[in-house]
Length: 459
Image (cartoon, rainbow, N blue to C red; front, top):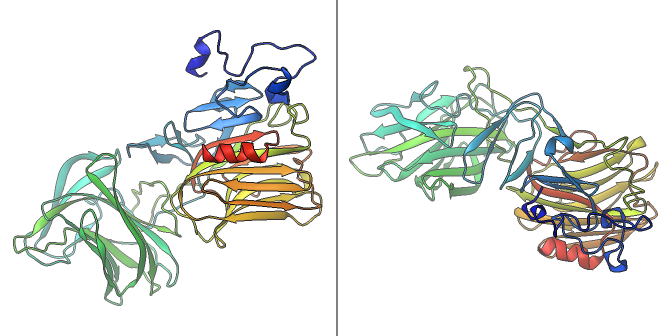
């Protein structure tokens, strides 16, 4: 319960009692009519369900509850997630990966392509003398072994490398992620090699801003380098589209530019299929096997027979508004990504999702055997995004932060599915289309006005 509730004059959701013939706000009452008085909770005054992962607080039916009483997670593997300072925390199987100050990550199955991706001391080899390597001591970000790479000549291609256990496919997109720290050279080399063809693609240069220097083994795009919050670790990411179908070799090095050579501290390197850099998966496999993180199945737990104490009583029978806040690293992923899905029987649902091909935020509703009705607004930037989506009989409105808005009408009813069976977080009702991003908060409310929607997304 929030700190303000410690003061008896400021209960967390308004007055502690109300007349028997009046409704509280969270069950459809109106503060203006005196039914409950001013709303003082952290959730929206019209919310029946509020999940605030960023601040680690949950509400259902006007009552604050612990996470374990509101959200259930199924995932048959552990999960890592970095906090706001970049330090990685481990979550057991069937435990939601959520950190206060960051949010909850909900993603699909991912298998890294690089074995020993967090420790270059084991399983990696030096490309050629005079490159040497040693343990630099200590760990970085809670998971990386610090490996000092030293080159005593001015050759720019010395690197420590490893062969992937499986082939990449020509024309497919892969995301490359490299972590490293400053050495005496002041530079970094990230190296991708077509072994059979003898060609290379490289990113190299100053640790804070390396550039693409060669693309003979496939095109490189969307290059970005950031200094992480620890103040000493850099992360470089980019998309790579190989021009060969074979087993590649990858590596990192100091990229020396002076006769005396130099050093760099290499931490780890990985390649993920697709365009999304998901949370790190420590792979400690053999030369023929990598580790996998399985998909997360995250749902709102039922209260009685439904995720609500009856949506009629909560004022949701004729329509509702979904409020959602997320943090995205990438937009046009090429696949649909679900934010929230309210499902009923016979495939009925309300859905809010990202169309990864059209690069649009969309809502869809399906009732009975009717074709789903959809409206959408273009996405213009990754990062923090707020969404408000209103579903009312035959009338729909979608609003996102930054100005995007869309409205539509349809004979397809917008009312919540009846019977309501499941609320899915970060995935579709067919258990696919994972968000692969951070959910900060989600709320399900009685229908909001245009002004209320606009005010929420602008907050």
